Length: 116
Length: 117
Image: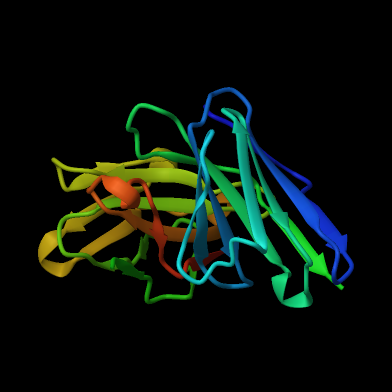
């Protein structure tokens, strides 16, 4: 089956610094990737849709200058949390969709970000 | 905008017992419906999905779900639960339209399943 990886699996950073999270589709090409945020004991909230070679589309209320998304290749999308603050601490999950109109998304294992 | 409600935050069942997890959705038309399972350290795994056709869908790991349009529900069931089924389960919907909403999933709050031996 399709496999999506994320790196790192967990990261601790200091307030004010930036951190980059990678999402890779390992055995398929993903024209579209999605980034979600999950708070403890809560659901996944879609942050943005990332399309290869174009600008990401952000959901309402998500600061695009704070959460920078780059989808430079068909197998890699990155999420950079800039000038991180403790309130950015969360579980970030990416998913990738195979081309061809299939609705199925394959999810990465997530990245736990803690900002101190 | 679509929304998904999972009324039960936490369910506990005994191993071997039957299971039903509830999911209700709000959407103007018939959405695409999904159930995912999330285990610690692993990505969300698709259990089953409904797009159209037979309203009773079979999934992996012995799970099934039934789409009931009149009740706007898509409940997940399993006749006999195994200890390895303990995890968090998410119901999700996606609009059947194209454009900017294409493929966007809206998730319910999740239901944590605990299985007692």
